[in-house]
Length: 347
Image 1 (spheres, rainbow, N blue to C red):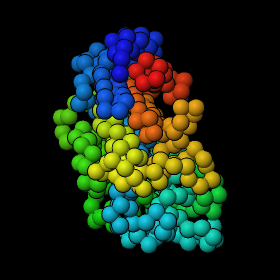
Image 2: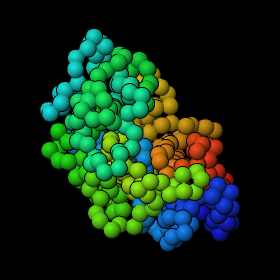
Image 3: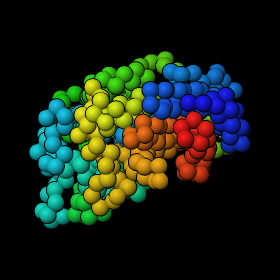
């Protein structure tokens, strides 16, 4: 990669424009990996460092899907089988919509399993409350998903972005492994990939260096960080470096050279699925004239981030900011930084 100083200068200018306190970025092309941190963990505070944790928000789904693919490789689960074959402590209720097409792991991961999240569900946990158990979420016993999970349309006939689907996938992981979700994801993905600075909120070690979230106005969010009830869908905290490692491993797997993911599982995960061409398994496709583009977005209270990589060209970028800019990634500082890096370092 080239022009790194110029890139950092341009990114710093964008941070001033958007009034973003802190930013963590990583990029790779081939065997060349680059990462940098700019700004501060919290307005008026210490500088961002490489190991500092940012909220991955919905990029958590990317990591959860990778864990499922590892279980597929191990022969523990199959993507096409009914998930009720694997669920022990909870079962998806039978319905006429599941007669023609059952709920499977692959349609869960691609947001096409028939679940539609209730309005207002999966909002951040209120101050003083604990993270609810996943079974309580699925059973409708919490205000964060106030009714039991149930299929609302025939699976694979429409796309509906769903945290409920990932709560079901999480229950599959815990039931087949016999481990808490944090332990299962650690053993299946984090340790094999070398993601040493990635944690689920419920298993977060004390006194780790973490960024604080900020509103668009620059004000620190209440409690410094929002906590979400569905950990597999939005509960992971990580660094841009660690997310870059996962992208690199899947890029290697695409060409059959990974020791963690098989070529078959990587290509299945990163390919279009079902009725929505843009949906992969835990990721999205945004293909363009430059070829395959794999994307995962995260956006929550006080944070925004994006992963984008091309497994054919072996290039990728991760951008994480500790601010909610108020607009989606293509329009925000995250998208602007992506374009700066693509134009100056990768293209």
